[in-house]
Length: 161
Image (cartoon, rainbow, N blue to C red; front, side):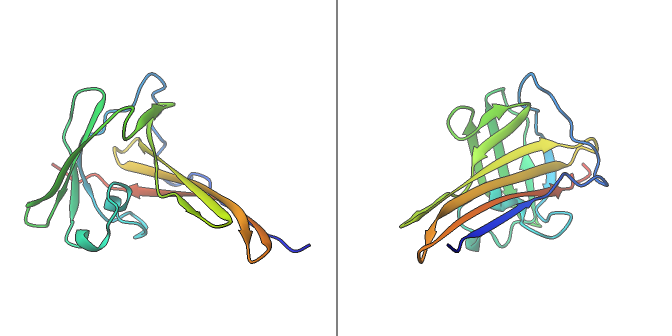
């Protein structure tokens, strides 16, 4: 029997500043961050919005400090225009788990295949945002069983204020 298995679980890069761990509750996320990751992979906006096409002009993301249980983010253009201003609430759009914010990213379900993404946001010791994307998928594609498991890391620099 033929099958397909892919496992791509990257470890946290050892040359990045250490992750800040706060097991009590979610770490406060405030400040302004570059939209482009340090490795030029996924823009930061892709973790918070469903449409990439309409967000091409986003230059930075601002996270104003909010009350516990709320997470506000604003997409800014290079000339400081607010392109999107939204607030997520704990227990509805995200949850706190092991000191980080977590939410379900894109899920895919179609005949024979199911996938699930879990996105985790933390800060590192330099104050940057670090996103860990972990996903799994499994099913049968054209009578071939398949399983995929991935974990990728993305970091976004804080903009000097």
